[in-house]
Image (cartoon, rainbow, N blue to C red; front, side):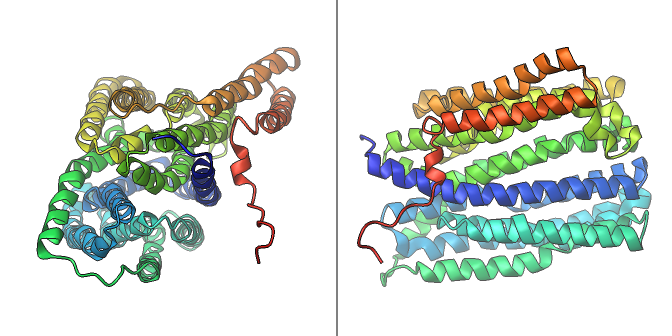
Length: 502
């Protein structure tokens, strides 16, 4: 099927609108997350901070397990049903995905509460988080369902803005009033999920009613077939999503267990910038996801390829400068959290290099899932998780946080290169369009080659680093303008009303 220019323009603009709003919200969420990490690192000692990061890692893992892979399944099926004129089954799809998450989240919250005493003096903080686990799971699932309708605003407004700002305000207040109290900070960090869950439920209700299906009854056989197909698709993704979260969080737990809570704190702080990159990835990916699912549902691979390559170019343009600057400023970045965290500079460099590879592949994991290959997706994540755990067990006792960083870096590379090959072979898609190549070359030139040249002349002190960054930013902005058509930046320009329109 040939890609019509008008269709390509429309879909690219849709992704740009949703992606830009999501990236702005993600930048806010990532920034507030870094500040929250700074508050925790400053308010608690390294041992207590390590316990806090380990407890929140367990909390996120529990919420990921409760979601049963529905963040992918709901977007895939809601988009697919709408694209194939089966919108009378949308209500069935929502109930199929939401009810099991609601039930399982309470079961896992009880399990986390029961398991908490194993943490001895940190049990109170973990039990505090267990109370809010159902709210965390339902927030993400409800907002995912709104994205299945291509509605990005609820996710940006509620998760990126409201939740992150409330977390910052609550944690900051708790740190002032209850200094060095792990349970108080855990409560402050988790309580924002309660109002956000309620607001997310109202947002989904509004989106569903605004696009209410036509008056057409569905047969019992149709509903049964949808439930079966939904879980056949989502089942592997449920395991994969848990493994993916474990890939992102288990390293903190392993460092705490094998290297001590102080090492876990250093590792968590040093790797905090990765969250900024992940938020940017999510911001673009969540906007692309429903449109990509629709294109693949009707066999329009040209549109799918265009969306994937264009979005990857934008992702590289946003994230590669951050990664390269983090490598240059690693000691300065870590000194913000306290002098005892500067030992994590090698951790920052290793993880930043791995993130360059990961973001260069784009949202390849999501593309593989939207192509219906969730079982492959599961296999890839399991391979990456085995790599992480295996290398952590080998390296953390000897090298501490750096050993965990090497394990995670190798896992990230594997978890991106494997699906990259699979997507190319099965769906004939790849991320290396003209925009991706232009964004990568521009980023390396402005924030890699240029800083090296400037600091070679001006030195690596504050003046040299500041001058190289300023010149790099100016050159980057100018280069992006010159390459704006290749980078498809025109899609972010507001559409001009047609002549004669109101």
